[in-house]
Length: 283
Image 1 (cartoon, rainbow, N blue to C red):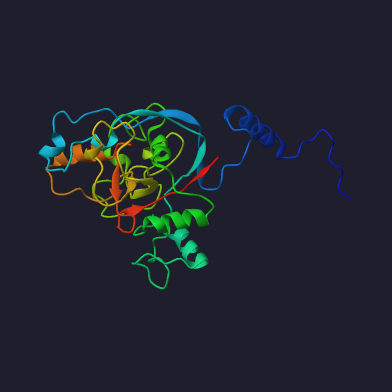
Image 2 (image 1 turned 90 degrees about the vertical axis):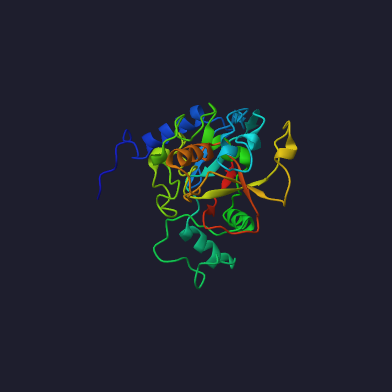
């Protein structure tokens, strides 16, 4: 018969439980201590600066043959307050999306066969999905697509850094510019993650957000932004190349497009091989 444990002994989990309770009560500004959902990261409540008041005074974008001056889509800078929320640590993968397709009966991306993704791509971000496809997956998973503000808050932090990793553009921190020839396994660039631990906010694939594209409130020249067919906002840049430019010009464009405040847009009904998504959830 086994000897009864002394009353002074603790269960092996007791110290960890005590520390976890302390962390919940002192580090999180939530009304209750809740467990972070698997695969997600807590982005604490905060007020941050969204957008920018920078101007392309040198007219570089137009000199490069681009259609509008840089920064115009991001005007004006304004203070935005967000409640705490969760954001997926990684972009949604082909394997995760396959479970959704097989379980829900939702249609598969056009390059799949027999409702299954191509072999060997389990941990690659799913691509060639419409906005509605991405929205349906997030809802199926008990989540939702992030707003533009939530996406930018995660990428720029409360200090307004240009890039998730800091103030300087460094091409080796993200899958950008066509060097890899396509997307890569999610999380392949750990030095490019944000301080909260979100990976691939810049590079790999563009990411759908909930917002319709248009001028920000208070824009001095909304006609410079609005127009054309309705489009949803994309964030985060992608693996794809940006055209045939001299090396120094290409680097300049990459650095601009990789900023956390940069906005792109696309037809929500279209599919592209460099567009995917990640999900968010209220905390």
